[in-house]
Length: 330
Length: 78
Image: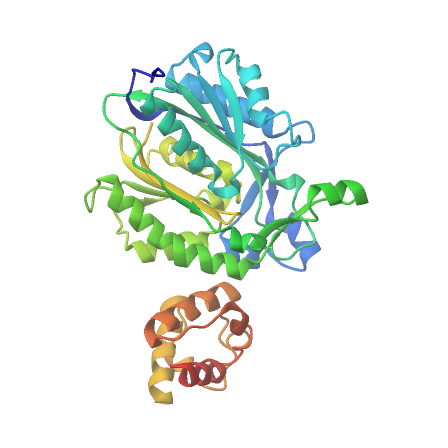
């Protein structure tokens, strides 16, 4: 007795990119009063000038649908050709059914399997790793990977440490077969022993029972230290495994957690001026799993990167979890 | 030895936060006098760990209010 193995393997790469940015712009001054802070303090502390919040009639699925639809158009792929829809999120308002199933139905991906990935700010790169493996192994031909978050639903606007950081948005890519490999090996991992550093309190079961909201909390300095300390080594590892030669990297697109983390990582990696650095956080805030595709889109739309150029992406956050790859701009 | 540590710390604070090295004196408070915010303190602490070969846990960082606190901690744990 032998079981069949898929007889199709392929190179994988990013074929298309699409995003959704909510229309409501929220300036620092709108949030600063409740936390006894100021526009200047917020900008200095995080680099954020303004961010976007979704409307009451918008959610992870609706934002992700628009981003996925835009990615399909960008890739020139039919929805019916999609084999799998993966959504990285932790703010979908349903525990079940998944945001991916809803988005798949919305875009007409009638032949697709669908599931959500729960890796918070590392979610997009986690989902890319899965999509990459599916395409390369023949498990799927076209995969849509979406990062979509409505963090404004779970933020404590009286918490000085987090009220000004988190925001809403969605980004999506189509992963599919390519002539040359367009996604490097993934470097990823998790440290659950530090899970209380970023956690929603109280847990949702307790919150439901007691009739209180479950809101995000974060030990800012501890997370900053982890991000700056460990992600530098992770990025070096990704670059080493990617096959890129020194000087070949076109752009650095880290999860837009905080511009201070980005700056520290740029220093650690000794990236020179030839490398474009993603700083979408200035106008988008920290959108967790959506931040990387949003930041990449901003770089491409402004002409700072072009199709085919290699960029390094790394996501890191609650878990604590992290993941990174080098990929070619779609 | 404390003078060497102070000089090394001043260089780090200058590199991390752009504060002139001469301003980094023993009696100065990082936050109130030198305007080094809590995220910059994390970077300063990490650089001190590398430079002086000490370990400065998160729990200790909040006790390092003045330059003297930091210098004395490093001197005691080298």
